[in-house]
Length: 320
Image 1 (cartoon, rainbow, N blue to C red):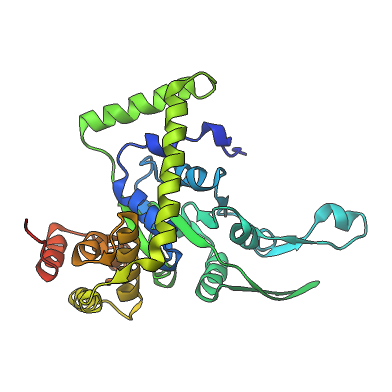
Image 2: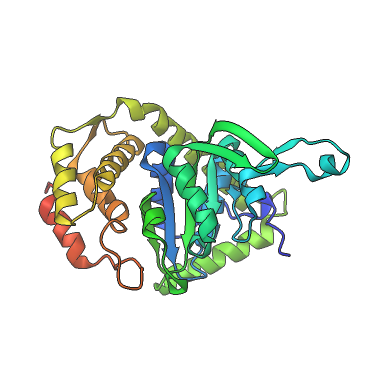
């Protein structure tokens, strides 16, 4: 069995190279939790998990609660404490869903979520859509319990698609691609190797400075969270969202709403008092890419330069 990494071995968030789309999606979801969860999709070895763990450590000083692929329903929903049962006492034990809702980060992380058992997917769908957990099982019945957490998942599209019902529950989807720029690849290698060499050294200024930058970033995001309520939607926000949704033939209205909420979070992060077309244009890809029709294989259709051009045509950039 592979043990989870110790918190001190996690690369600081400020040392990540690239990953801009995923990092922005995570930050938006943190500032405005109404946006919903984040799905990172990309090939293996592209640092999806590394980025999410670094983000969790940055905002909560601990790793996100993780739902493993082979988890039993007892572990997910909650059951009885085994040691207590062996002693003749029945004492309930919370499952991962409750643990995530009560954790500092309020994140439930699922790696390779597209490989999750259908039974667990159904449980997640029910809880994420209602925010309520009901346990009615043999030997244990419990009243409805509120469980409010942000679902963050990763998947490798080469290993299969994700059920549309679950895909739709993610507010934002970030595409994580391998870095092709040689200089950027060199930065990644040098950063990781130096961190591995110095992370256990108490006198490492490299690691200490990274931790300070992480703390400063956390303070910035918390400040953005605090001012979110004062950020107003622009007079054209509703119409802009509706035009994008119509152009991309979205089914239902969840995509329109997520687009507006994500734009508001981005405005709060940047200290803007008003949501503008520019904010909406910059979050359009992650809010809309997974809400179009899936391919025959169930995979996400690629977001192309033509899609960017269509967004820019509907929401033209302001020149000057």
